Amino acid sequence: MRQSPTRRRRPSTPSWTVLAAAVTALAACSTAPPAAGPSAPGTTAPPPAATSTVPTTGASTSTSSGTPSTPSSPTTTKAPRTPSSCAPDLVARMDAGERSGQLLMVGLDNGASRTSLDALVARRHLGGVILLGGWTGGSDSVRRTTRHLASLASAEDTAGLGLLVAADQEGGAVQQLRGDGFSRMPSARVQDQGSPGALTADATRWANQLRTAGINVNLAPVADTVPTSVGRANGPIGQYDRQYSSDPERVSRMVGAFLAGMRAGGVAATVKHFPGIGRITGNTDVTARGITDRTTTVDDPYLEPFRTGIQDGVELVMVGSAIYSRIDPGTNAVFSKPIVTDLLRDRLSYDGVVITDDVGAAKAVAAVPVGERATRFIEAGGDITLTARPSAVPAMHDAITAKAKADPAFAQQVETAATRVVDLKLRMGLAHCR
Image 1 (tube, rainbow, N blue to C red):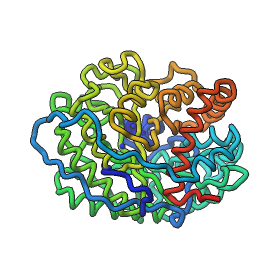
Image 2: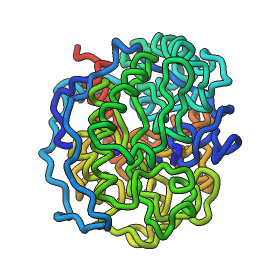
Image 3: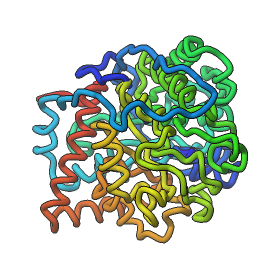
Image 4: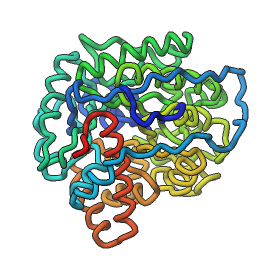
């Protein structure tokens, strides 16, 4: 989120606020860097033992040329992944409320009680939680919370599935988990000063720390490219040195290296914020102004880092809330079928889980009714709606469930999305065939 809003071919079985005030909404996945302050309540994570293993695939080998280059092919060449055989069966056994719950992730603020989301997880059958607000008490403190969250998984409350427990651990200004047991991670700009091999080694260590603390999903790395002509005027990324480079080939290389480290450490990774928020000036978490990208096209060279993540088998892709006038004018990316389905799924051949940047507190989508933020994302081709505000969950859950009951076509989209989420959980060891 912290718009902090992505592999080589995916193996069938992986081994595996804007300072203080703004941080609340941003901390989970959006643009602004998380500061140590309240963010949002809600999170659940299974213990490290239940965490899946990521296949150890090498980093991308593209080289930096110093100037953006056009992709050699407009589409990604990747053999489609066959979902785990029992994922459709598990979803078929769920009722409408359970399917809807798997498509929601909620934020748990560092200042909230670790039990504050218990009733919400149980009643709404939630599939995931993200730790927000800057957790500075160290690994043991985080582990006590994630252990409790993991205990909430049950046949009755979560359809027998473990919870995705996420954190925004990019480095620099956006490092939600700090203190004993967590290395201080440099910003992406500093990470980029080393070699891809060095970054993979560092990312492996960081992933091991996350896994030990009970985190199984990292909402990183940032795959956005910020052109030198924009630089720090880019509110979500450039202002905080969250980009690796202004050269998409170099960004691709380092994204691949970071993903390889996460995979080696057994943590699922997320490339963000598709299709790229490096050319806007406004931060979608805190404003609806300056968030229109008038340059990016469906064959833009700045898509290359996302393509690398997809080819390398990244577990999740986060879609941002900016608007792209040359792809789908006037529509936030999270609600855009031309972006989520036509570009990401069809043109780039991504068949995995797609998650939103925060759409609970983000100003960019504030004009859209809360429940519709979830249903419109699913209609666009997405899977997991992330909200930093637990108070938004009931409206989102009700909207998904009601629309699925009234609209057979939408019900099929919900089933397909839930199947993708369950398939990921099967590969992570958070679900089992029965």
